[in-house]
Image (cartoon, rainbow over all chains, first blue to last red):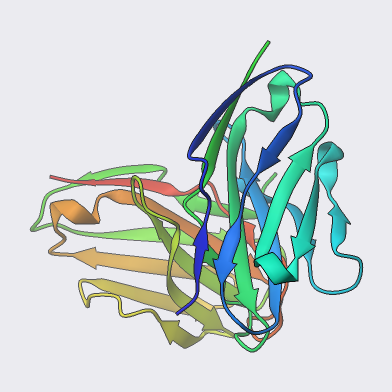
Length: 114
Length: 114
């Protein structure tokens, strides 16, 4: 069975710092990749997704992620974080032959200090 | 935002109680999902429904009994739960479970089993 690893469980940054959250998955076939975000007190919502094409994907609120197939990675980045980016971030993987079944990583809790 | 709603938001129950969680989606989707989010564990898929038919049961114990009377409503009936079942239960929906697509999540029900 596939698994998803998010190595950073907690990240604390100051405003304007750059962000990179790691996501690695274990699955040898073609995958679809997602980042979801959960802001305090809000629903889990989609940040960005990759299905095919350009491996650099841009999402909402200035976030982007890069799919590196050879490294089985889909890291999330933002050049300059804001206090409002404080949230928990989840990476999820969907094998191409598994319908819409998602396997989630354990999440990374980001705190941005003003 | 009223896309996916869940009630109750919080539930405390004893091990001998019977209770139900309710989920309703207002997005016209055909697929609905139950997830379990336990402390320090990744989000785990429990059940998938497509047009009211259960298409996935991720080895969930029988003390959890899902019901999907129509494509807009999903229930999770609970009986004789254990303290380790305490978790956040999330409902999600998507257009079609056989196609990779964004899942829209509800706010969750925080369940505590005493």
